[in-house]
Length: 312
Length: 312
Image (tube, rainbow over all chains, first blue to last red; front, side, top):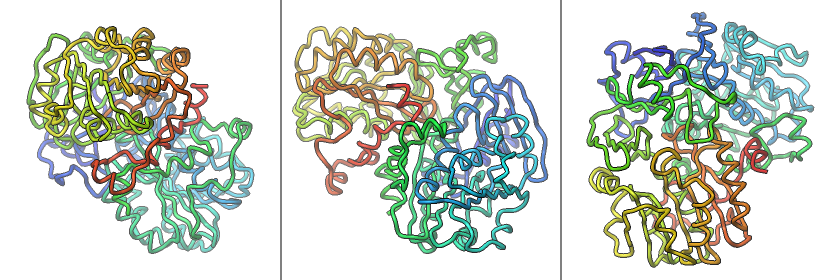
């Protein structure tokens, strides 16, 4: 039993995968009684996609990079055994992580993307006419390269003249940028491996300082089904750093638990669940939006009762 | 490779499971180009839960009934290889399927449940003080029995004096009941096997006739990620039968794609996304609601742009 087995790719929780490699079945795990862990883990569950063809499989300097053509979800990018995107449902994540902060902002001109090497967030940011410059800081050149080759619908923004691309560590990059950006989007993998530093308080202090006075950030916010203790921790320290800390979610069928969250923080005290600009149907078409619309913006911030209570 | 393998249960799409039994890997499937099928299938993907102990596994007159204790999701009920509920996340589905029609109704006194043998919907219906009588028609006695034994938090309503329980076919039951119920909830499995007849136009004609003039129904509405053609079909014929046809959804992490939909139809032309009764925090606590609240009611009807366009 491994990630690639009899024509199927299986995404295990990172801790389970480690155990399965050692014992063959993932037994003997130590779990919290509610099955939740602080980090990016989801023990005891797994998701599989049927593989038509493995297109690329190499180790970069930072992680294991796999791209396969699936039977029913198009091409799939996998980093260290975890699905990052499939061509069939990536739009829900990319549109929400990008457009929630961008439409909450009155006039976003300068945008920074940390991570996002597959280009999906870049594609969405470039749809905003107000945006004059997009800076991207992605640590792994190999992710950019495989996306350009195997995910053309996600990566076409890499040739846009508005883009400044830095290949390097986002944490280090932020140390030299202060009071500069209208919106910063952190499109990271889970807090295991290269993205671990992007879930700590010192990272969010750097984000706050790199934003200008009206700045808004959004970050990949894991799943309320799987990571409630991690999210409570993230929200608690960000309430000390920002005037407004809010949380939204959307369904993304191929992420663990089928849901993805978005942590949205603002330096000003105004409600980020209210879009500053409303889209009519002509604008929706022009921007080729498939998930996001102005009503979804508001609704995404309405949380199930157990999540609302956990964040109070 | 089978549903139970090396300490894990794997839920395949019914068509894939058939193929896997025959060929060992699920190859040689005939798919629509977009990977979607009309029925309750989700080819090319699978979801697994780690098994601690198999508690029950028998064939009833209608289906294969499996209950296992999972490592991280509590006890799990599986019918014909498909997960029906886990103790960890069942509340999202049960609360939404029950409370969307019940709170859209001003004064629900007589409620009918078709299916729902695990008792989860019954538990939620009985939380409404207005409800005087709940009738349930479940086809499979074995489902009721295993739920009473292995899912006590879901099945305690079976001892309530307000319940009239019929073990039999819902379709046949409805033929003898006209103009009788305020709310009818169809809590069925997928349209493969015993629940197949519950997705056809003649079934919805019977539902319409069994509802009184202000009646509202809700039905298990599959997933917009997986079953858009089926949903378009259901919505189209119901628009001929009802004054109001609406669709909501919520995340349920262990259902295929992690999302579940709810088809809500009313005999009167008023907006069912607006709750007729608003819950304050004391009422939420008294009703032990973990997913539903009055804001979630409205938000659940706000659909992603691609779904909204598909249903127009």
